[in-house]
Length: 186
Figure 1 (cartoon, rainbow, N blue to C red):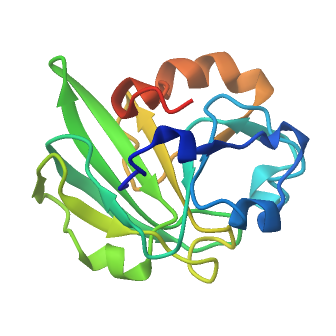
Figure 2 (cartoon, rainbow, N blue to C red; figure 1 turned 90 degrees about the horizontal axis):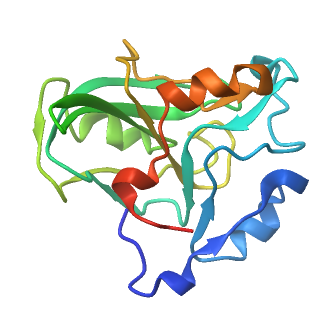
Figure 3 (cartoon, helix red, strand yellow; figure 1 turned 90 degrees about the vertical axis):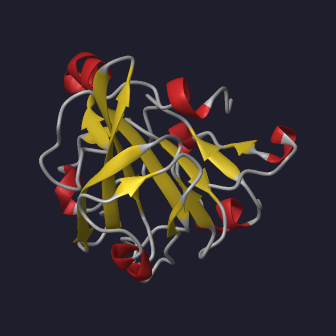
């Protein structure tokens, strides 16, 4: 993402009390927190009315905003998770950090993003890899990037963006805090 120059412009949302699309749209930039237990947000059947602990960082802004790679990597997986409430167009890039593989999921992208890079393609730090999708293609969400890390190979362009509370400890080990590569966003 191309963040605003002044980090004070990043509004930090509190989704523990619910999801308000109109309020989200009133902010030019917003951050949704990692490891946040969210209320009344994941209502689609795929969440089984129990998955609500967020395992990534959400960066809320306008549809069409560019998305950039945080480091050099290789495109591992691309797919369209097109069910309501899902990610929509999604990609996973494999990075090597500290001599260990680290996978990053970029979700809620535009359909055009599915053809902007290809599986096996080498990506450079700062390279534009995608753009954000609108509600009609990104699972029905207000435009944002769901950015999530995994220390395990997900085997596809998908990861559980939210988990049930009873799976939280294991999820924290598998899906580390994205701020380790994005910096202190909040």
